[in-house]
Image 1 (cartoon, rainbow, N blue to C red):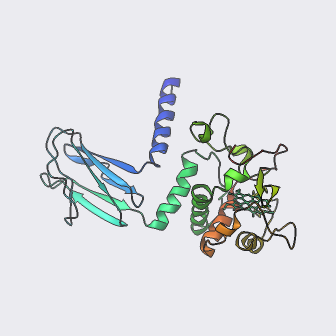
Image 2: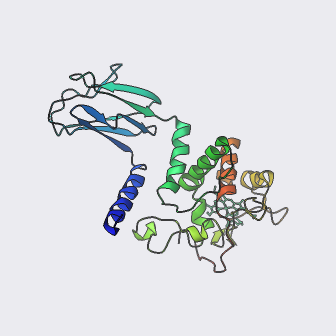
Image 3: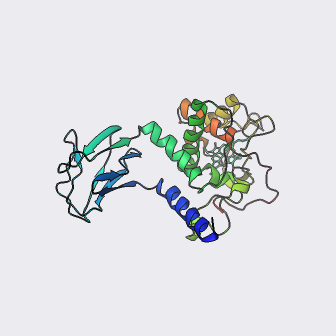
Length: 274
Ligand code: HEC
């Protein structure tokens, strides 16, 4: 493979990866097939059919749930899928043309998104999932979704949070800094004091922040400082995280067990989100 081809291939892979975050999946209508014939999408995503052929075609649901009507060459039709399941369709004019849209469940959508955050290299880390059963792998990806897309743990627990030149707060394309991901040492103000965020990556025995599941949950639910018995965490937003279900907290712990082990950086960051 020459440099140009490998460059194009890398670009194609990058675009393919970026696309999996997109909320619209494209199906090309050709003479005479749907391409791809099956798309799998997240709950709430849009599917857009575009007629790339030279004949008139339709996207018609087998059960009558939708009908694009006649689509001339170049015309498109879009539909939002807000229920999980498999939805078959065909072309009403050329009935041998068939396809299906597979819509993930809410749970599968969260797991897939947690996986995509890493697969698209927005968060360029490799999870340590070797030898884990599929159930634990799914829990780790669910944890990725909760930690990265919902809780902002990395904003406070990574110093710096973003790769140089990729800080979204500066209008740059977002990439988390893998070399400091969740390794702590950010100054966060709370309760009138400045606390340094903890290193949440696994210790030598594989425990996130060196904490057992029970102590970890107690810190997030009740704010008990694992390092200073009798005192409450002041900067950590545990009053919010403490409302997560046990299942979700287990997923967060499973994810933190799988992130790369890192030493706490020597330098401190002056504030979250740097
Ligand atoms: C607003 C910033 C902020 C966010 C967001 C945040 N943390 Fe923290 N966290 C801190 C700070 C600062 C500390 C240090 C203790 C304190 O609060 O006084 C801490 C401490 C902790 C501790 C205790 C560790 C120890 O051994 O002392 C755990 C566990 C923890 N955070 C987990 C998380 C997880 C998991 C998330 C995301 C779900 C998260 N944190 C989000 C700021 C934050």
